[in-house]
Structures are given as structure tokens and as C-alpha cells.
Image (tube, rainbow, N blue to C red; front, side, top):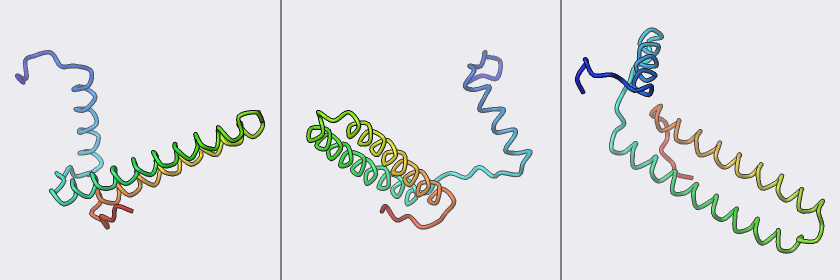
Length: 105
């Protein structure tokens, strides 16, 4: 893209973030093929965990379909589990980005 062409809001925001990173001394490094593969494996494993949790949740909902309090508790547990799984996934991906262990589980 030419430097003279108008830039999108996304491009402007990315430039600001890169400039901020340079000022703070953050180095931008490309991921290795091994890191990309490790991240893809982590995402596959955690997508499977989320799918499994969703299936279990739907099964539990069917069993408790007539108890509003039980349904509310099940929904809260499900949200909490999804957040925990997503957080764990992001933590592992960040570990790979930082060059740590590339374990998918």
C-alpha cells in the first residue's frame, strides 16, 4: 500500500500500537512454525473442551428443565466453566508466544 493512500482506522490504530511498543522497548518477533503448530493444537484441544462442556450443559439442562433455581445455577456454572477454559487457553497461547512450553493440554 502506498504511503500516500488514505489509511483505515485499523491501520492507524496498528501504527499507534507499534509506535507505543517501540517506545516501551517491546520487540516484535515472528512466530516459528513450531509455535504456530503449538498454538493451533492448543486451540483444537480447547475447542474440543468447550464443545464437550456444552454437550454436558445441554444434558444437564434437560434433566433440570422444571426447576428455575437449578437452571439458573447450571447456567452460572456453565458460564464460569467457559470463562475458565477460555482463560486457560489464552494463558497457554501466551506461553507459546513467550517461548515457553508448547503443551496442548
